[in-house]
Structures are given as structure tokens and as C-alpha cells.
Image 1 (cartoon, rainbow, N blue to C red):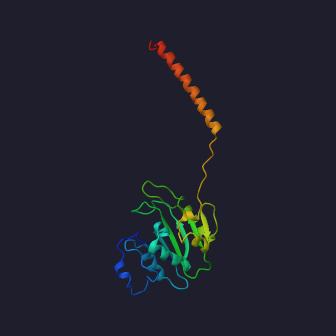
Image 2 (cartoon, rainbow, N blue to C red; image 1 turned 135 degrees about the vertical axis):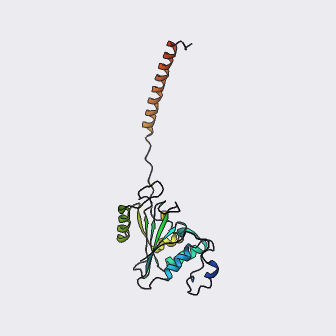
Image 3 (cartoon, rainbow, N blue to C red; image 1 turned 180 degrees about the vertical axis):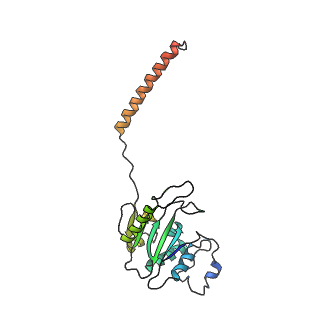
Length: 219
């Protein structure tokens, strides 16, 4: 397994030479001149073994949904059944950037055409300058990855058709629903509390007025 953190959206990645790449790595298309994310991903995929190759790469979230040439390259990765898993991470995990990142896992010779989405963005140990994934957080991610099953508000296994319906957009909230409904407001209880506070305020004002009269300030 190749593990890598690519330079997030590097603006000078060698675009000028990519079109004539002697290794033919960019046959799916050229990434944008000012964002090298898919250049690094493409390079890593092209170095994998054809039968057992697999890799994990840490990327900014823009890689999941940006369009244009990046969208076309992402679509081809998915249609070639290379993408295995998308894991959303918490913010402030890495030095030098506070933005949340994601892990993309790619595999050669997958046994199905699904993509597992894991939203681990809320599970972390908070720090003043940097957050941390605990052993428990990591164990949960690994167990979910190995089980490859639906977990409410945490993981979802998407079919190729579902991803196509989303125009090959891999934005995690499109697949993992983490919405928490707001608690219903008891309007009767709120009104009762408001009246009680109003009566208490009136009592305090009356008491204060009596004190002022005793001190000779009242008219």
C-alpha cells in the first residue's frame, strides 16, 4: 500500500511538460495548470502494480467535486473502477493548514464497482493548535473500511449508478447523511416560563420602588 500526502493544490507542478510526458501518465487528460492535485494522483496510480496495486492519498476536499478537467479525470478513475473508498477527516489535523482533508483509496482489480464513503470528520481529540485522531477514532475507521457496510450518519456504500446520478461528484454529504434534526420547541412551556419571568420582574420593580420611597426618592 502506497501512503502519501500530496502537496495540496500545488500551482507549479510541471504542467508545461505534462503534455509530452514520456511515460504517458496523463492519457486521461491534463490537470489544471494551477492545481496539481490530480497530477500527483495520476502519477501514483500509474505506478501501481496491475494485479495487486493499491494506494491511499490525502487530498483537499476540492478534489472530490471540482469540475472542468479535474472532473473529467475523476470520472475516468471511477469508470475504470479504480476508486475504492473516500474518507473524510477532521479539520486541523496537519501542520500548515487548518482545512479538513480526505483520504482517497484506489485499488487495481476491485471485486465490485462500489465506492465506500466514510465521514470521520467529527471524531477526533481536540487540541489548541492541532486536532488528533485517537486510537479509538482510527480503529472505527479501519473497522468500517473492513466491514464495508452502511453505518448511520457515518458510512455509506454507493453504487456506480448513484455516483453517475451525482455527475461523479464525490462530495461526502451527498452520500453520508449526518443531518441532526433540531429539538422541537415546546411553545406552551416557553410561554409559561416567559409569564413567570414577567411576574418576577414586576415584583422586583415594585419592591425597588418601595425601597426608593423609603429613602425619599419616590414622588
